[in-house]
Structure formats: C-alpha cells, structure tokens
Amino acid sequence: MKFIHTADLHLGRSLGDISLLEDQRDALRQITGYVRAYGPDALLISGDVYQKSSPQADAMELFDAFINEICSAGCKVILISGNHDSGQRIDYFGRLIEKSGVYAAGKAEKQLKRLELRDEFGPINVYMMPFVRPHNVRALHPDKDIKTYTDAVNTLVEASKIDFSRRNILLSHQYITGGELSGSEDLSLGTLDNVDAEAIDRFDYVALGHLHGAQKVAYDHIRYAGSPVKYSFGESRQKKSVTLVELREKGNISITQLPIKPLRDVRRVYATFELLASMPKSDDFIWLTISDELPPRDWYRRAEEIFPNLVRHDVVNSKTRQDRNHPEARDFRVIFNPQELFCEFYSSQNNGKAPTQAQIDLFDRIYKEAQTDETA
Image (cartoon, rainbow, N blue to C red; front, side, top):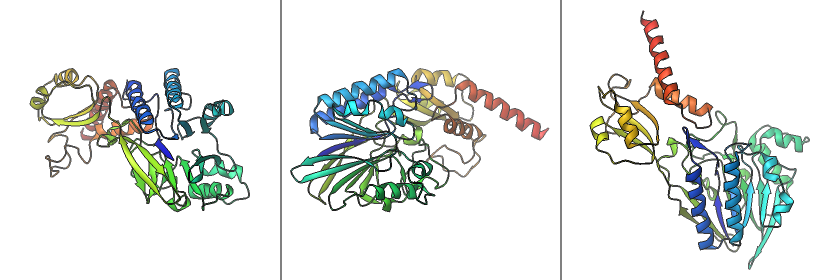
C-alpha cells in the first residue's frame, strides 16, 4: 500500500507583508501531480492545514479545491489538526465527508481515531492523533498522572489498545525529541513540549507534522514531511518535498522523497552595492545584507527594483559588526546586531511576519536616541 505524506501547509500564511497563497497553490498543484503519477492509496496530511484557527476565505477555497482534486484522482485523504488549526473546524462535516474518502481528526478523544485499510498483505490500521497538550489528555483521562507531553502521548497510545503485531501507521503533530528546528515553528521554550520517540516507535510508520524541515527522528520510520513551502529565512537552505511511503508485509517499508520546486524561492543575499547593481532581477523572497562602509543613500530603492519581493534588509560593516574577528568570507551576520534582534523578536511574536520598513526605521531612531542618552 502506498501513501504520500505531507504536513504544515499553513494555507493563508504570508512572508513579511507578501501573501504566499500563489506559492502554496503551486506547491499543492505539484502534490496533486504526484498523486496522479504514483497512485497512492491515501494522502496523509499531518496537521497545520491553515495558518490561523479562523482561516480566511481564500485559504479555505484553496484547500477545498485541493482536496477535491485529490479525491477525484481516486485517493483517500487522512488528516489531523495541528496547533495552528481549529479542531472543531477540521472535524466539521466529518461524517459527511468520509463518504467522499476524507477522514479527519480535529479534537483529541479518549482513544485515537482509527481507519482500517486493506491490501494483499492484510489490514493496515491508520491512527490519527491531532495536536495535544497534557491538559487536553488529562481531561479525557482524569485517573492518569499526566504531567508531560510524553505522558499525554503514551496515555493515548495505551488507551487505544493497539495490536503491534499488525501493521500500524500514526499521524501526529508533536515535537519529537531530537528534531531539527527551522525557527519558524511555534514551540515552547526549552523542552516543555518534547515527546520521546520511544512513545511512538512501535508503529510501522509515523507521519509527523510540526517541524518544517523534512527529516527522520531517532528511527528511519519516524519522519517529518516538512512544509511544502518555505515560510522563513531559517528554511532558505531546505529542499522541500513530500514523502512517498510504500508499506508491504510487516517490516518491509520503502521511503522516497519527492521534491517540491518553489514558485519563488526564499534566499539570503550578501553583497556590496556594486555587486548588487549587477545582479539580475528576481521575484524570489530576499533578505539582503549590504556590506559597504558607506552605502549610497538610495541603495534600498535600487534593491527594491532588483528584488521586488524584498522582505528584509540590513547593513553590516565595521560600524555595526560587534565581532571584528568574524570571518567575512563565511557570513556577514553578527553576534549582536540590534536591528536584527528586533526583526527576529518581532517575527517570533507575529507568526513569522517581518516588521515593515517604517517599523524598522522607528526602532533604529529610538535605539540611536537611547544610545545618545547613555553617552550624554
């Protein structure tokens, strides 16, 4: 039996002030192409369908069109809610849409929702675990001592009385200890929301969502599909993909990454103004760092002509670089750059949205005034 595993669609998300809806539409078109080319039995969507719990209409219309295309190709859809989703909205019309081959789990229940599929090797049980926090599971199992995220997951798995001698798949949207972060995920500080891999390692395949980089965690069969679109500059070097999983008899599984080509890439660009002026125009999303000691006053206007989707920009030179021994050939980034710290803090507080140029200019003015007051 074949599956295509994806996650973290975040439909409706923006990068800076620029909507990513067309980029998401193009990525979904590629996923639909893979469904038609490989003929999987089901598409697994492991949470964060939308960017917001109350998604805008165009994001909902895009998802509706996508699901209709997948179902028209004869492929089932199995999905769970993520921490960005509303569980109630994901469950809406659940019984009705199951008749079309769409199976959703939006809210946690005492036992994991299960769907049984069959192939020539027998039954395959697909278990759906929407994003859960310890207090969600404590409310369902008040007799259990549930303090951590691992406790919560263990409780749901144990309550589901799974026969691990059979083939079992789990959809989950949690942070598994050891996963590599991109910087654009909404996670708790420290290790508060970590789940130990041992809580889920007995499944034959674990289709994870939550982290935006495609990766395995602890074991080959525990995998994040990653997001199909780049949602931050922390993801600029990632290669986006979906995961093709072929499950044969118990213990026989093959996993293949199918690439997703970005409509518009997300890139860090380091340049002098002279080098910038010679660059070809690009619609990619750009974070531009200029290294001139005295850049021209109109450098930003010229940069916008070359990069119309310029999301962030800064100047890093001997006046702003705090670490003077930092090797320039490797990176212009600095250990302490007030403007960069402000941009990163603003983005972390606003779901990945970058500050506007006016907000950056205001911060720069206030910071300079504060520096002047300190030296007066």
